[in-house]
Length: 116
Image (cartoon, rainbow, N blue to C red):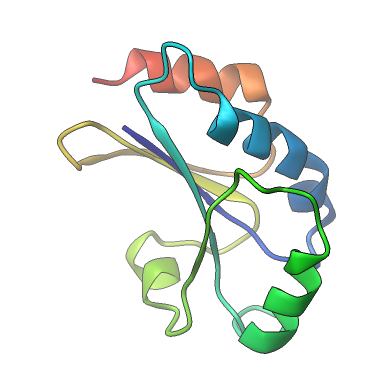
């Protein structure tokens, strides 16, 4: 299962929840999911890829993988129109749910538990 978080460096809600996302990514015990995040440089007001990487390297989220969507294709495929947007993918690779906006860590965990 995959929890996919689409976010941007300028998004205050995104930044305020990066700690929780990092904690979800580093949790190991009983974990049957992967946490990934996606940033799309130059799309929707995001920094250039080089500027984003330089900025992000100064943060302390060592467990949170950040995928770079330089073409914007993932944004398009998942219908991302605002940040943050969450996508939940089941163990068969099927998109189960997408949801824009703030989601509490406990709700992310319960959603991941509820999907197969």
